Length: 97
Image (cartoon, rainbow, N blue to C red; front, side, top):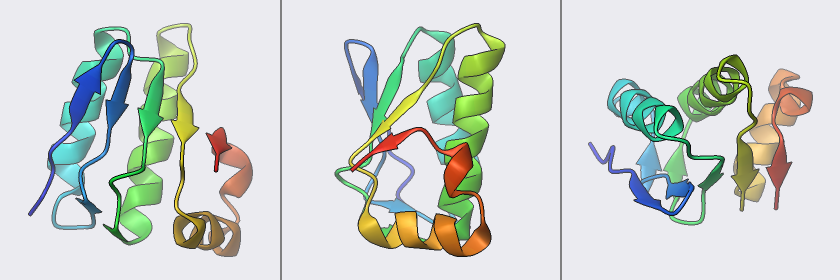
């Protein structure tokens, strides 16, 4: 399980994997970063993912909105963007590729 989340000046990174097995830990780690003021998440390290990654990203964005801000998703992997489109949730993600 790789739920590592690294943070640098308002931006944090996902770990290399964001799957069902790591989603709960990754969600909690990201929520801590958002509570501390993070405004973007970089998905560059993300190499292994499933639909749980979409749930986590959407939950992070909702948490940022609840704080009165926004969370920008940077470098969303093409495969995850395709998965979001297939599930019909792509419009819920504020992402740059």
